[in-house]
Image (cartoon, rainbow, N blue to C red):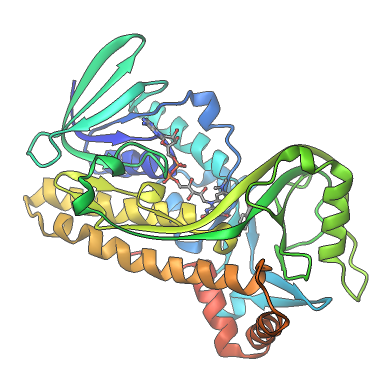
Length: 390
Ligand code: RFL
Ligand code: PHB
């Protein structure tokens, strides 16, 4: 098999890249280790930045998002028993969309298949070769047969645990990591919304977040031990903690319901530089991870592949390689801004195991400053709705 761009991974990065290339007349093949059902059912992100929303709309895959997603014009910060609103619309003129990642995945898969795109699911043992030549290759097993895909370029969109990043010789990789001493316990609940916009709550018992999925289904998170197990969290403990961490002086009420999904999420910051080796280009979680507190991961994946698709388009239209040469530096500027924002939000809102009363007071002082200083609120709002795409 031959293609121009071989894409490893059918997450948001790989699927969106394939879609953007198709719109420019550039063919690609996407290989994915999981089944279509699995990728369409994996519960992850929920917040789309303004620029991601516009990109999906402009490229013809925003219709269901516009029908079923929720436009939010702000978020709430809750601390010391009171709630404060950060008004995105007033501060930035922009807003965000709450629309689940697996719904974006469904829309992208449907668009690719409808356009006759090549998506190969349930491939095994993928490996990449000859990355520093003009014809890199992907080899994999499908239905017991060895397949070889010859490419002009390979896009490593296979997430944090994929195979493309480790295929770069270690002396060519500079890695930057921070692992946080806590995780998030995430649940999906059958209940009506308790709030019209997301609530990020700071509390002595730890962070909590109230998000949503639909008028019937809510998404909630609680800071927990990173090695925590589901068996330590019976429903009664989950509700006790959520009530304790989210209670306010004004008597805010959390609507309870049947919990039908639970999971523990590790929290880390990670970047590899550069995001390219020879003809392999990394995009999305394959190249960087942010803690979910800033809601940036999926949006960074979209921003990366937007830059990469433009660079590949310029190469195929004019033979000019400059944009491909600039890909890593261009993408990394946005990546590091998002790394900083996600680290800042995480540091400001979570309880640290070695936290002193002094540290706790500093967090409260910073939160107080965010909700009283227009400049600081604007910083949060600008970063949350997302900086303009390249
Ligand atoms: P993905 O989504 O991990 O997709 C990678 C795909 O590659 C496949 N794969 C392979 N295929 C073939 N051969 C191999 N050897 C392969 N190895 C892996 C995998 O099966 C998979 O299908 O990476 P991508 O495309 O870079 O997308 C990144 C996003 O998924 C991620 O950043 C976000 O989910 C992060 N995130 C959030 N981001 C936001 O922008 N807003 C949010 O509100 C937000 N909330 C979250 C989040 C992530 C979370 N978790 C679970 C980590 C909330 C949570 C709870
Ligand atoms: C979500 O709805 O899953 C979500 C929202 C905001 C975040 C992280 C996750 O910061």
